[in-house]
Length: 292
Image (cartoon, rainbow, N blue to C red; front, side, top):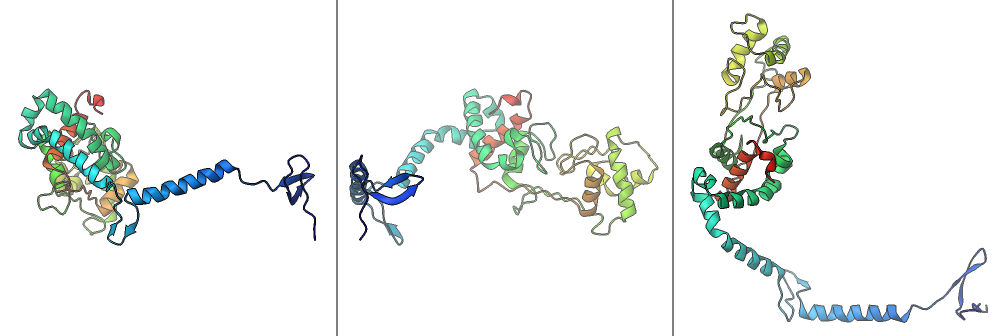
């Protein structure tokens, strides 16, 4: 039978572990730790009795105090909704000119729309409407479907190429994939589109110009400046949604493009859609950098 070794200073037994002469003591757990554990267990039992705790299939134990955080939050939301009912109703019913003429209403609308934009729009269009890969910038004055609050409201409400029956619809044909143009013709047209920053030369007899007027002008216009309200962009500026490099233009001509934006009707209230329309309209106005 082995004899337990004890530390001569503390009187505690050692565990038998020895690290280069340093021996581990078998010290007892401090009493304060034991008291702390006991108190937490007692508190847990009391909490089980007083507060909602244990799940019971479709329900849960309610507790003697009957507290319900979901009900408390719902009550707070109801109070907040009632407090802003008047000006939310005004946003839903007044025309945009009347809203703009009311500084207090505009302040409330923009302040409320800023987080709404962050929650629903920013993931695609970027912070402050700065845009992103394949998603348009909203803080400039380049609009495919119109940049007034009224036009933006329509776009928000019905979307673009969405399942809603009143959606904006636009689809660029896949000229290569669908056999509308040959690959040599697509190469010629690609080269021509890259020259459009210099403007369109009327009655240009070149093969690229003829191909453009025959296949593209119907949507992008004879001057290639786009037709607002049709979703066809201006091809003479430096603003390219998918990219203006040769390879990207070729890919666009080969396989087409069809951007999609969801219809927010039914997801957001009329008031929320209209305050967002005002907010987005303001992003492209002079001094829009002051918006949240």
